[in-house]
Amino acid sequence: MKNIKALRKAIRVFESYGIPLTGKRKGANFYNDLKMDKVFVSGLIYELESELKRELEDEKIAKIQTPSELIETLLRAS
Image (spheres, helix red, strand yellow):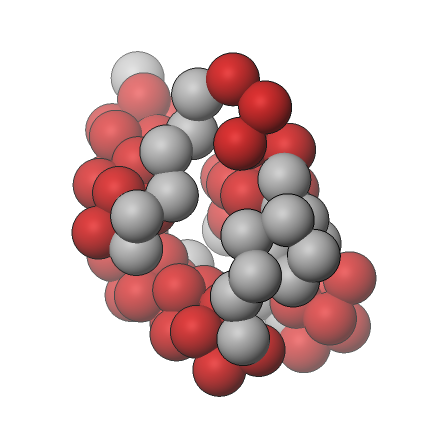
């Protein structure tokens, strides 16, 4: 149940950035497919961390390339 609430919050943050999490878009690369700048991706990650009250390690953040990877990593973080 806790993950469902976190997922709903994450979806709202992604939607505020104009990223729908349906279909192929959830697996789209932030940089190549969605044409996002590193600054915007960092902002997205910061907002998600704040909203979900979780913090990711810098090594994990550097490896994240898609919305689905980001959500999965955040939900696993404690």
